[in-house]
Amino acid sequence: MVKGRRRRQARLWVLCYHAVCDTPRPVEDFCFLSAGRFEEHMRGLSRSRYDVLALDAALAAQARGELERETVAITFDDGYRNNLTVAGPILERFGFPATLFVTTGFIDSEKLLWPNRILQAVQRTALTSLYWRDHDFPLVDKRDKSAANARLQAAAKSLSPQDPGAIAEEIEHALEVPVNPSTAPGTDFTMVSSAEIAAARHKGIFQFGAHTVTHPILSALDQKALETEIAGSVESLRRLNGGECVGFAYPNGRSQDFDARAIAILRKLGINHAVATNAQPNTAGSDAFRLGRFAIGASDTWSILRWKLRKASVKSRLSRLGSNRRRSQRHL
Ligand SMILES: [Zn+2]
Image (cartoon, rainbow, N blue to C red; front, side):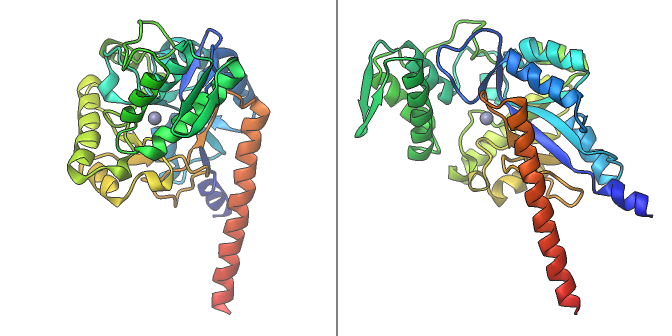
């Protein structure tokens, strides 16, 4: 009995990565890890107290009360090709599975996601400073450019959450670079192709989930656009992935970035779990459509990653202690 209770309380920690690159970045970006950094994380996990399982297998085990040890699930957002070609061999070496949440409008396309349009514009511009919307952005060296990239991406998200691409276009004009350019095949920005999804699903390391068609902030959309973005991505992924797609990741993923309308559409489509980016471990009692995830960035060493998980562990224990105390006070 006690044993069973202990088993049910093992927690699931979901990590959220984006791109993994095998050449040095000209401009630093949170979402673009080096292969060396990613390998450092996988080595750390292999020596840690955590089991590593595929997200849907871990969720199913947890629901059955059979998640015996603290468990990590590895996920990648957006659908970069380098998840398969650079992270894939590293995952294979450690025997770790992973889930890719794919922005389906970019499959078989050479177009860039809007944050990467800004990143590429900052990389390519010949300007040494930018004055845009009453703000100065020095662009002299790599450090300036990395800071400008982060500030400009944050500005695009807050100025036009329903269409950040429009702000990316404004920034491309301001930086005097081509507007909405195609990317040459084989860059860090290249997305997976339909053939690569088909080949990867047979390897057994990767699973695929949906992440909208064009990556808008869902809570900013009207009902029709919301349905198109969610159903469009789930349906095209099912077409490419042998009919399978049970998971979804909300773009940006903070609690204000999606709402009950999105969850209702996901349920209707037969999706059984959706991940956010609230940095919390998941228990058997967690809401399957608001699963916690830890965003892991380019400058996170293994020690920082482990510290992020430990900090959340202490926080979740304290809040559990608080709710237990409130419950027992009610019984008095
Ligand atoms: Zn994303």
